[in-house]
Image 1 (tube, rainbow, N blue to C red):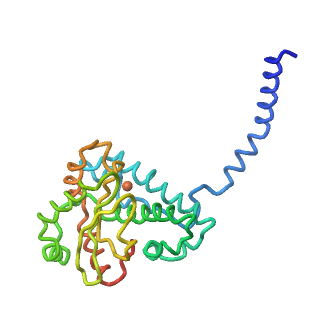
Image 2 (cartoon, rainbow, N blue to C red; image 1 turned 90 degrees about the horizontal axis):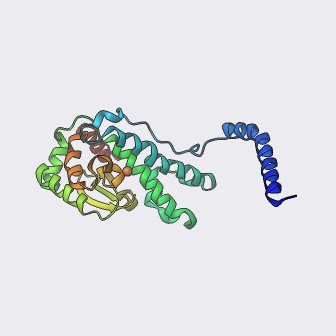
Image 3 (tube, rainbow, N blue to C red; image 1 turned 90 degrees about the vertical axis):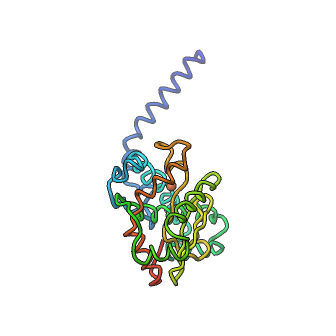
Length: 245
Ligand SMILES: [Fe+2]
């Protein structure tokens, strides 16, 4: 038999064989649990994706939670199949004791659990409100961070200085004292045993569709979508010792 003909015949035979098993494969895939099945879960946004326009575009607010945040959750659920203990303690406790996580998956847990915690906080503390802080949070900003105008300028500058991808945070301790810090990648002050009052994501995926390389413009516009009411609730929770991620 001519070799080309033989190859064609072989290909046809393999193709027929594949066609014969395809329906069963499809059925098996439909019945199998998806890659995201597991103990970790991403809550839906508490507002529609277009709620933050014109400051953050709706497309970003679809892709950012549904693909970027979801990828961290999916990765965690895959790790949890062999290491269920990462889901058996509160997230801040796991992140504060990363040395207890097996070395083989420690970096994976650091990146993905950090990313899950950071984004869970991030969706919560935004909304269509804007405005200014009030009450205890406003007083704490005046006392610890030099007043709202100075604090916002310092926060924007710190966010602008993050090289590559990372976050800028305001931390809060049990006495209600505030401080500002930045972290690279998906690291979080939770890794240092601290609590996060709020923070801003300065990864390019958070702003590139609308702002491209103009991170300073994004940082400035972002204040229009901070939900100060929610920040106030988190501040009270921190003082009560009940603030999680
Ligand atoms: Fe992000």
